[in-house]
Image 1: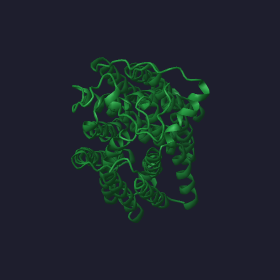
Image 2: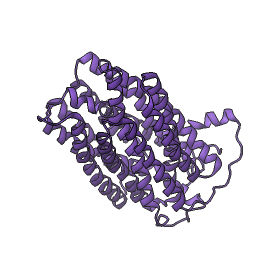
Image 3: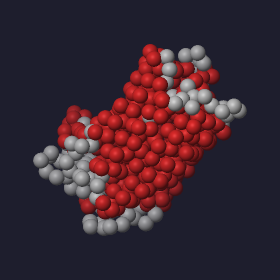
Length: 422
Protein backbone atom coordinates (compact mmCIF):
# COMPACT_ATOMS: atom_id res chain seq x y z
CA UNK A 1 0.00 0.00 0.00
CA UNK A 2 1.39 3.37 -1.03
CA UNK A 3 1.48 6.06 1.60
CA UNK A 4 -0.49 9.26 1.08
CA UNK A 5 1.08 12.20 -0.69
CA UNK A 6 2.59 14.95 1.42
CA UNK A 7 0.05 17.56 2.44
CA UNK A 8 2.03 20.47 0.98
CA UNK A 9 1.90 18.94 -2.50
CA UNK A 10 -1.25 18.98 -4.63
CA UNK A 11 -2.53 15.44 -5.18
CA UNK A 12 -2.29 14.05 -8.66
CA UNK A 13 -5.62 13.18 -10.21
CA UNK A 14 -6.49 9.51 -10.13
CA UNK A 15 -8.10 9.97 -13.51
CA UNK A 16 -4.79 11.01 -14.97
CA UNK A 17 -2.64 8.31 -13.40
CA UNK A 18 -4.78 5.19 -13.67
CA UNK A 19 -3.80 2.85 -16.52
CA UNK A 20 -7.40 2.46 -17.56
CA UNK A 21 -7.95 6.21 -17.97
CA UNK A 22 -6.19 8.29 -20.59
CA UNK A 23 -4.70 11.52 -19.31
CA UNK A 24 -6.69 14.46 -20.55
CA UNK A 25 -9.61 12.28 -21.65
CA UNK A 26 -13.01 13.92 -21.50
CA UNK A 27 -15.24 10.84 -21.56
CA UNK A 28 -15.76 7.88 -19.28
CA UNK A 29 -15.18 4.37 -20.66
CA UNK A 30 -18.13 3.23 -22.76
CA UNK A 31 -20.89 1.60 -20.74
CA UNK A 32 -19.33 2.41 -17.37
CA UNK A 33 -21.89 4.95 -16.18
CA UNK A 34 -24.94 2.66 -16.66
CA UNK A 35 -23.12 -0.11 -14.81
CA UNK A 36 -22.21 2.26 -11.97
CA UNK A 37 -25.87 3.21 -11.80
CA UNK A 38 -26.86 -0.47 -11.73
CA UNK A 39 -24.38 -1.40 -9.01
CA UNK A 40 -25.30 1.51 -6.76
CA UNK A 41 -29.02 0.93 -7.30
CA UNK A 42 -28.64 -2.70 -6.24
CA UNK A 43 -26.60 -1.68 -3.18
CA UNK A 44 -29.20 0.82 -1.98
CA UNK A 45 -32.02 -1.60 -2.76
CA UNK A 46 -30.56 -3.93 -0.17
CA UNK A 47 -29.66 -1.24 2.34
CA UNK A 48 -33.09 0.42 2.22
CA UNK A 49 -35.08 -2.77 1.94
CA UNK A 50 -33.32 -4.30 4.93
CA UNK A 51 -32.69 -1.25 7.11
CA UNK A 52 -35.96 0.53 6.37
CA UNK A 53 -38.47 -2.33 6.31
CA UNK A 54 -37.38 -5.94 6.84
CA UNK A 55 -35.07 -5.47 9.81
CA UNK A 56 -37.50 -3.27 11.83
CA UNK A 57 -40.26 -5.81 11.14
CA UNK A 58 -38.02 -8.68 12.19
CA UNK A 59 -37.11 -6.91 15.44
CA UNK A 60 -40.76 -6.10 16.09
CA UNK A 61 -41.69 -9.77 15.67
CA UNK A 62 -39.02 -10.77 18.18
CA UNK A 63 -39.88 -8.17 20.87
CA UNK A 64 -42.55 -5.59 20.10
CA UNK A 65 -42.37 -3.90 23.51
CA UNK A 66 -38.67 -3.01 23.23
CA UNK A 67 -38.47 -2.57 19.46
CA UNK A 68 -37.04 0.98 19.55
CA UNK A 69 -34.13 0.11 21.84
CA UNK A 70 -33.43 -3.23 20.16
CA UNK A 71 -33.41 -1.74 16.67
CA UNK A 72 -30.95 0.86 17.93
CA UNK A 73 -28.75 -1.87 19.37
CA UNK A 74 -28.76 -4.03 16.23
CA UNK A 75 -28.25 -1.10 13.87
CA UNK A 76 -25.51 0.43 15.98
CA UNK A 77 -23.44 -2.72 16.40
CA UNK A 78 -23.74 -3.64 12.73
CA UNK A 79 -22.73 -0.12 11.72
CA UNK A 80 -19.49 -0.57 13.68
CA UNK A 81 -18.68 -3.47 11.38
CA UNK A 82 -19.53 -1.32 8.37
CA UNK A 83 -17.16 1.37 9.63
CA UNK A 84 -14.32 -1.08 10.16
CA UNK A 85 -14.70 -3.05 6.97
CA UNK A 86 -15.08 -0.22 4.47
CA UNK A 87 -11.58 1.33 4.71
CA UNK A 88 -10.01 -2.10 5.19
CA UNK A 89 -11.70 -3.44 2.06
CA UNK A 90 -10.72 -0.30 0.18
CA UNK A 91 -7.11 -0.71 1.23
CA UNK A 92 -7.15 -4.35 0.10
CA UNK A 93 -8.42 -3.46 -3.36
CA UNK A 94 -5.72 -0.76 -3.54
CA UNK A 95 -3.12 -3.36 -2.62
CA UNK A 96 -4.26 -5.86 -5.25
CA UNK A 97 -4.64 -3.17 -7.89
CA UNK A 98 -8.07 -4.50 -8.87
CA UNK A 99 -11.68 -3.49 -8.12
CA UNK A 100 -13.78 -5.98 -10.11
CA UNK A 101 -12.87 -9.12 -8.11
CA UNK A 102 -13.86 -7.38 -4.86
CA UNK A 103 -17.11 -6.15 -6.37
CA UNK A 104 -17.91 -9.68 -7.56
CA UNK A 105 -16.89 -11.36 -4.31
CA UNK A 106 -18.81 -8.97 -2.09
CA UNK A 107 -21.90 -9.18 -4.28
CA UNK A 108 -22.00 -12.97 -4.33
CA UNK A 109 -21.36 -13.17 -0.58
CA UNK A 110 -24.38 -10.93 0.02
CA UNK A 111 -26.70 -13.79 -0.95
CA UNK A 112 -25.36 -16.02 1.81
CA UNK A 113 -25.43 -13.23 4.37
CA UNK A 114 -29.06 -12.37 3.56
CA UNK A 115 -30.06 -16.05 3.66
CA UNK A 116 -28.58 -16.28 7.16
CA UNK A 117 -30.27 -13.07 8.31
CA UNK A 118 -33.67 -14.28 7.13
CA UNK A 119 -33.35 -17.57 9.00
CA UNK A 120 -32.62 -16.34 12.55
CA UNK A 121 -35.13 -15.60 15.30
CA UNK A 122 -33.23 -14.07 18.22
CA UNK A 123 -31.74 -10.61 18.65
CA UNK A 124 -28.24 -11.99 19.17
CA UNK A 125 -28.34 -13.96 15.92
CA UNK A 126 -29.84 -11.00 14.07
CA UNK A 127 -26.89 -8.88 15.24
CA UNK A 128 -24.37 -11.48 14.07
CA UNK A 129 -26.07 -12.02 10.70
CA UNK A 130 -26.53 -8.31 9.94
CA UNK A 131 -22.91 -7.62 10.95
CA UNK A 132 -21.85 -10.22 8.40
CA UNK A 133 -24.15 -8.60 5.86
CA UNK A 134 -22.66 -5.17 6.53
CA UNK A 135 -19.14 -6.59 6.17
CA UNK A 136 -19.66 -8.17 2.75
CA UNK A 137 -21.70 -5.22 1.46
CA UNK A 138 -18.93 -2.84 2.42
CA UNK A 139 -16.43 -4.96 0.49
CA UNK A 140 -18.73 -4.46 -2.50
CA UNK A 141 -19.26 -0.76 -1.77
CA UNK A 142 -15.63 0.17 -1.15
CA UNK A 143 -14.49 -1.25 -4.48
CA UNK A 144 -17.47 0.15 -6.41
CA UNK A 145 -16.96 3.63 -4.94
CA UNK A 146 -13.34 3.65 -6.11
CA UNK A 147 -14.25 3.10 -9.76
CA UNK A 148 -15.05 6.81 -10.33
CA UNK A 149 -11.62 8.23 -9.38
CA UNK A 150 -9.95 5.23 -11.07
CA UNK A 151 -11.62 5.39 -14.47
CA UNK A 152 -13.48 8.70 -14.90
CA UNK A 153 -11.66 11.90 -16.00
CA UNK A 154 -12.11 15.05 -13.93
CA UNK A 155 -14.22 16.77 -16.58
CA UNK A 156 -16.84 14.01 -16.38
CA UNK A 157 -16.94 13.58 -12.60
CA UNK A 158 -20.26 15.42 -12.28
CA UNK A 159 -21.94 13.06 -14.76
CA UNK A 160 -20.40 10.04 -13.09
CA UNK A 161 -21.48 11.26 -9.66
CA UNK A 162 -24.99 11.77 -11.03
CA UNK A 163 -25.01 8.18 -12.29
CA UNK A 164 -23.83 7.00 -8.89
CA UNK A 165 -26.24 9.29 -7.06
CA UNK A 166 -29.22 8.09 -9.08
CA UNK A 167 -28.68 4.70 -7.49
CA UNK A 168 -29.96 6.08 -4.19
CA UNK A 169 -33.46 7.15 -5.30
CA UNK A 170 -33.95 4.18 -7.60
CA UNK A 171 -32.58 1.73 -5.04
CA UNK A 172 -34.59 3.36 -2.24
CA UNK A 173 -37.80 2.96 -4.19
CA UNK A 174 -37.13 -0.62 -5.18
CA UNK A 175 -35.97 -1.52 -1.68
CA UNK A 176 -39.04 -0.01 -0.02
CA UNK A 177 -41.43 -1.63 -2.50
CA UNK A 178 -39.79 -5.06 -2.21
CA UNK A 179 -39.51 -4.79 1.57
CA UNK A 180 -43.22 -3.96 1.84
CA UNK A 181 -44.13 -6.71 -0.63
CA UNK A 182 -42.33 -9.31 1.48
CA UNK A 183 -43.47 -7.94 4.86
CA UNK A 184 -45.16 -11.29 5.59
CA UNK A 185 -42.33 -13.38 4.11
CA UNK A 186 -39.16 -11.91 5.55
CA UNK A 187 -36.78 -14.76 4.64
CA UNK A 188 -37.83 -14.62 0.98
CA UNK A 189 -37.47 -10.86 0.97
CA UNK A 190 -33.92 -11.07 2.30
CA UNK A 191 -32.97 -13.60 -0.39
CA UNK A 192 -34.42 -11.46 -3.18
CA UNK A 193 -32.45 -8.41 -2.02
CA UNK A 194 -29.22 -10.41 -1.83
CA UNK A 195 -29.80 -11.86 -5.28
CA UNK A 196 -30.23 -8.38 -6.79
CA UNK A 197 -26.81 -7.33 -5.49
CA UNK A 198 -25.23 -10.56 -6.75
CA UNK A 199 -26.65 -10.12 -10.26
CA UNK A 200 -25.41 -6.52 -10.43
CA UNK A 201 -21.94 -7.64 -9.30
CA UNK A 202 -21.77 -10.32 -11.99
CA UNK A 203 -22.87 -7.88 -14.70
CA UNK A 204 -20.47 -5.14 -13.57
CA UNK A 205 -17.41 -7.38 -13.31
CA UNK A 206 -18.09 -9.15 -16.62
CA UNK A 207 -19.01 -6.06 -18.68
CA UNK A 208 -16.32 -3.57 -17.63
CA UNK A 209 -12.68 -3.68 -18.66
CA UNK A 210 -10.17 -3.17 -15.90
CA UNK A 211 -6.45 -2.81 -16.29
CA UNK A 212 -4.53 -3.83 -13.21
CA UNK A 213 -2.93 -0.89 -11.43
CA UNK A 214 0.80 -1.13 -10.66
CA UNK A 215 1.37 -2.95 -7.38
CA UNK A 216 2.43 -0.49 -4.65
CA UNK A 217 5.58 -1.09 -2.67
CA UNK A 218 5.08 -3.18 0.50
CA UNK A 219 4.47 -1.13 3.64
CA UNK A 220 4.87 -2.43 7.23
CA UNK A 221 1.60 -3.28 8.96
CA UNK A 222 2.02 -0.55 11.58
CA UNK A 223 2.60 2.03 8.86
CA UNK A 224 -0.51 0.80 7.06
CA UNK A 225 -2.62 1.39 10.16
CA UNK A 226 -1.17 4.87 10.52
CA UNK A 227 -1.72 5.63 6.84
CA UNK A 228 -5.33 4.43 6.96
CA UNK A 229 -6.50 7.67 8.56
CA UNK A 230 -3.78 9.89 7.14
CA UNK A 231 -6.27 11.40 4.71
CA UNK A 232 -7.88 13.25 7.63
CA UNK A 233 -4.71 15.32 7.96
CA UNK A 234 -5.66 16.98 4.69
CA UNK A 235 -7.53 20.21 5.50
CA UNK A 236 -10.10 19.97 2.70
CA UNK A 237 -10.67 16.23 3.05
CA UNK A 238 -11.20 16.62 6.80
CA UNK A 239 -13.91 19.25 6.35
CA UNK A 240 -15.60 17.21 3.63
CA UNK A 241 -15.59 14.26 6.05
CA UNK A 242 -17.15 16.37 8.82
CA UNK A 243 -19.86 17.78 6.57
CA UNK A 244 -20.79 14.35 5.24
CA UNK A 245 -20.83 12.83 8.74
CA UNK A 246 -23.12 15.52 10.17
CA UNK A 247 -25.66 15.33 7.35
CA UNK A 248 -25.72 11.53 7.35
CA UNK A 249 -26.11 11.46 11.14
CA UNK A 250 -29.13 13.74 10.93
CA UNK A 251 -30.58 11.70 8.08
CA UNK A 252 -30.21 8.30 9.73
CA UNK A 253 -31.47 9.47 13.11
CA UNK A 254 -34.81 9.81 11.32
CA UNK A 255 -34.58 7.26 8.51
CA UNK A 256 -33.68 4.34 10.78
CA UNK A 257 -36.99 4.79 12.60
CA UNK A 258 -39.14 5.65 9.59
CA UNK A 259 -41.42 2.63 9.98
CA UNK A 260 -41.90 3.24 13.70
CA UNK A 261 -42.49 6.97 13.04
CA UNK A 262 -45.30 6.06 10.66
CA UNK A 263 -46.67 3.63 13.23
CA UNK A 264 -46.50 5.82 16.33
CA UNK A 265 -46.10 9.49 15.31
CA UNK A 266 -47.99 10.20 12.09
CA UNK A 267 -51.77 10.23 11.73
CA UNK A 268 -52.16 8.00 8.66
CA UNK A 269 -55.30 7.91 6.51
CA UNK A 270 -57.74 5.15 7.35
CA UNK A 271 -56.87 1.90 5.64
CA UNK A 272 -53.22 2.80 5.01
CA UNK A 273 -50.79 0.59 6.93
CA UNK A 274 -47.33 1.81 7.98
CA UNK A 275 -45.57 -0.57 5.55
CA UNK A 276 -47.82 0.66 2.73
CA UNK A 277 -47.04 4.23 3.75
CA UNK A 278 -43.31 3.49 3.44
CA UNK A 279 -43.94 2.21 -0.08
CA UNK A 280 -45.76 5.46 -0.91
CA UNK A 281 -43.43 8.12 0.48
CA UNK A 282 -40.22 6.41 -0.66
CA UNK A 283 -40.98 6.83 -4.39
CA UNK A 284 -41.89 10.46 -3.72
CA UNK A 285 -38.50 11.01 -2.13
CA UNK A 286 -36.84 8.93 -4.84
CA UNK A 287 -38.29 10.98 -7.68
CA UNK A 288 -37.14 14.19 -6.01
CA UNK A 289 -33.69 12.66 -5.44
CA UNK A 290 -33.46 11.57 -9.06
CA UNK A 291 -34.26 15.04 -10.34
CA UNK A 292 -31.90 16.84 -7.96
CA UNK A 293 -29.13 14.29 -8.48
CA UNK A 294 -29.08 14.74 -12.25
CA UNK A 295 -29.67 18.49 -12.22
CA UNK A 296 -27.23 19.11 -9.38
CA UNK A 297 -24.50 16.97 -10.95
CA UNK A 298 -24.82 18.58 -14.38
CA UNK A 299 -25.09 22.16 -13.08
CA UNK A 300 -22.12 21.70 -10.77
CA UNK A 301 -20.10 20.67 -13.84
CA UNK A 302 -21.46 23.56 -15.91
CA UNK A 303 -20.76 26.28 -13.35
CA UNK A 304 -17.78 24.54 -11.73
CA UNK A 305 -19.28 25.26 -8.31
CA UNK A 306 -19.32 22.28 -5.93
CA UNK A 307 -19.38 23.97 -2.51
CA UNK A 308 -22.40 26.11 -3.33
CA UNK A 309 -24.51 23.15 -4.41
CA UNK A 310 -23.39 21.01 -1.46
CA UNK A 311 -24.10 23.72 1.13
CA UNK A 312 -27.51 24.73 -0.24
CA UNK A 313 -28.69 21.14 -0.63
CA UNK A 314 -27.70 20.32 2.97
CA UNK A 315 -29.65 23.37 4.16
CA UNK A 316 -32.71 22.22 2.19
CA UNK A 317 -32.45 18.82 3.84
CA UNK A 318 -32.34 20.52 7.24
CA UNK A 319 -35.46 22.57 6.51
CA UNK A 320 -37.36 19.50 5.37
CA UNK A 321 -36.87 17.84 8.75
CA UNK A 322 -38.79 20.64 10.44
CA UNK A 323 -42.01 19.82 8.55
CA UNK A 324 -43.00 16.60 10.41
CA UNK A 325 -41.88 18.16 13.68
CA UNK A 326 -44.40 20.97 13.21
CA UNK A 327 -47.15 18.88 11.64
CA UNK A 328 -47.19 15.09 12.27
CA UNK A 329 -49.69 14.43 9.48
CA UNK A 330 -49.67 12.34 6.32
CA UNK A 331 -49.55 15.34 3.93
CA UNK A 332 -46.65 16.75 5.96
CA UNK A 333 -44.77 13.46 5.62
CA UNK A 334 -45.23 13.54 1.86
CA UNK A 335 -43.95 17.13 1.74
CA UNK A 336 -41.02 16.14 3.94
CA UNK A 337 -40.18 13.20 1.67
CA UNK A 338 -40.17 15.38 -1.45
CA UNK A 339 -38.11 18.24 0.00
CA UNK A 340 -35.69 15.92 1.78
CA UNK A 341 -35.23 13.99 -1.45
CA UNK A 342 -34.34 17.18 -3.30
CA UNK A 343 -31.76 18.18 -0.71
CA UNK A 344 -30.22 14.81 0.04
CA UNK A 345 -30.01 13.71 -3.59
CA UNK A 346 -28.22 16.86 -4.74
CA UNK A 347 -25.90 16.74 -1.73
CA UNK A 348 -24.75 13.17 -2.31
CA UNK A 349 -24.25 13.64 -6.06
CA UNK A 350 -22.25 16.86 -5.88
CA UNK A 351 -20.43 15.96 -2.67
CA UNK A 352 -19.13 12.80 -4.33
CA UNK A 353 -17.77 14.92 -7.18
CA UNK A 354 -16.27 17.41 -4.71
CA UNK A 355 -14.51 14.70 -2.71
CA UNK A 356 -13.12 13.03 -5.83
CA UNK A 357 -11.31 16.32 -6.57
CA UNK A 358 -9.67 16.73 -3.17
CA UNK A 359 -8.39 13.20 -2.53
CA UNK A 360 -4.99 13.46 -0.82
CA UNK A 361 -3.43 10.65 -2.89
CA UNK A 362 -4.37 9.20 -6.29
CA UNK A 363 -2.48 5.97 -5.50
CA UNK A 364 -4.59 5.38 -2.39
CA UNK A 365 -7.97 6.44 -3.78
CA UNK A 366 -9.88 3.40 -2.52
CA UNK A 367 -8.32 3.61 0.92
CA UNK A 368 -9.07 7.32 1.27
CA UNK A 369 -12.60 6.91 -0.08
CA UNK A 370 -13.00 4.08 2.41
CA UNK A 371 -12.07 6.54 5.14
CA UNK A 372 -14.66 8.96 3.75
CA UNK A 373 -17.22 6.17 3.76
CA UNK A 374 -16.68 6.05 7.50
CA UNK A 375 -18.57 9.35 7.41
CA UNK A 376 -21.45 7.32 5.97
CA UNK A 377 -21.14 4.28 8.20
CA UNK A 378 -19.83 5.95 11.37
CA UNK A 379 -22.89 8.13 11.95
CA UNK A 380 -25.00 5.01 11.58
CA UNK A 381 -23.26 3.75 14.71
CA UNK A 382 -24.32 6.82 16.63
CA UNK A 383 -27.70 7.41 15.00
CA UNK A 384 -29.63 4.45 16.47
CA UNK A 385 -28.34 5.10 19.99
CA UNK A 386 -28.86 8.86 19.73
CA UNK A 387 -32.32 8.41 18.24
CA UNK A 388 -33.45 5.87 20.81
CA UNK A 389 -32.27 8.12 23.66
CA UNK A 390 -34.02 11.17 22.17
CA UNK A 391 -37.27 9.27 21.64
CA UNK A 392 -37.15 7.68 25.10
CA UNK A 393 -36.34 10.93 26.93
CA UNK A 394 -38.71 13.15 24.96
CA UNK A 395 -41.47 10.56 24.76
CA UNK A 396 -41.95 11.05 21.02
CA UNK A 397 -40.42 11.74 17.64
CA UNK A 398 -40.76 15.55 17.39
CA UNK A 399 -37.42 16.13 19.13
CA UNK A 400 -35.83 13.59 16.79
CA UNK A 401 -36.78 15.64 13.73
CA UNK A 402 -35.47 18.83 15.36
CA UNK A 403 -32.15 17.21 16.22
CA UNK A 404 -31.82 15.94 12.65
CA UNK A 405 -32.45 19.43 11.29
CA UNK A 406 -29.71 20.94 13.48
CA UNK A 407 -27.20 18.29 12.40
CA UNK A 408 -27.99 18.78 8.71
CA UNK A 409 -27.58 22.56 9.00
CA UNK A 410 -24.19 22.09 10.66
CA UNK A 411 -23.29 19.83 7.74
CA UNK A 412 -24.18 22.65 5.34
CA UNK A 413 -21.85 25.03 7.17
CA UNK A 414 -18.97 22.53 7.23
CA UNK A 415 -18.23 22.90 3.50
CA UNK A 416 -17.31 26.60 3.83
CA UNK A 417 -13.69 26.05 4.99
CA UNK A 418 -12.87 23.83 1.98
CA UNK A 419 -10.36 25.68 -0.20
CA UNK A 420 -9.41 23.27 -3.00
CA UNK A 421 -12.65 23.61 -4.99
CA UNK A 422 -15.18 26.37 -5.54
